[in-house]
Image 1 (cartoon, one colour):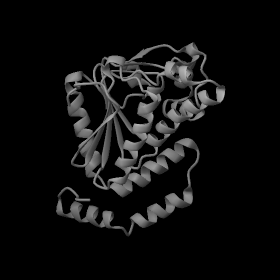
Image 2 (cartoon, one colour; image 1 turned 90 degrees about the vertical axis):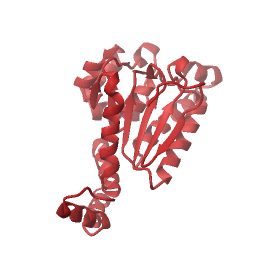
Image 3 (tube, helix red, strand yellow; image 1 turned 30 degrees about the horizontal axis):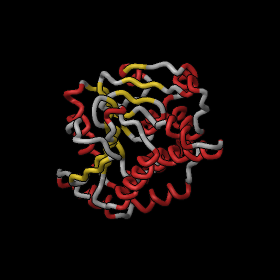
Image 4 (tube, one colour; image 1 turned 135 degrees about the horizontal axis):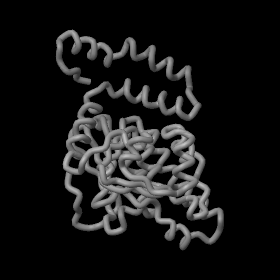
Length: 261
């Protein structure tokens, strides 16, 4: 996958087979997200969700960074009241939560550094495959910003209380090995192996049973939030026991071949 583009633009969508890729594309500004990018990301997420042929989504950036986060200067310039500032922050929060709630499995291809709100955008993905030169920091405490609650919850449930406190309260930068150690990165690889690692994981996810994965992803996320709908999860479990996916899975296992879902 190339990390170059002819011109900066809103996020780009590419669909090849069962895989969709969304690329943040403002490399001169380290893929800093603008207000219009939030609307476009929401539109692209909806498009991915509506296409039954898409089995996996990869989110990445153009150039040397994944993303520098949301453009706080543009928020301040547009805001004439605290209510409008809250609205702008809520718009970003809604996009991140929408990404987390996508039914298809998601991979963040961290091609470089990840900063500010984009650390939460990446954390909302199911997997994060990053280069060994990546770095991250969450500058909220340095900026005087109390981060939005769902983002703090994501940090706590995925990285643990102590790591969340370290990242939020110290606002210190950490490198890729530390990102891997605390569980922020799923996998860390040299740049030359990044695409191979992402492609391998994407192929595995695209080949598994989509409805079973969708339901289990939902249950895992609900468990993490302390909001499990046990009745719905149990119904999905019972439905899967008599569904078409398990029939194909069992037949493929008996035939010693890859399932075709």
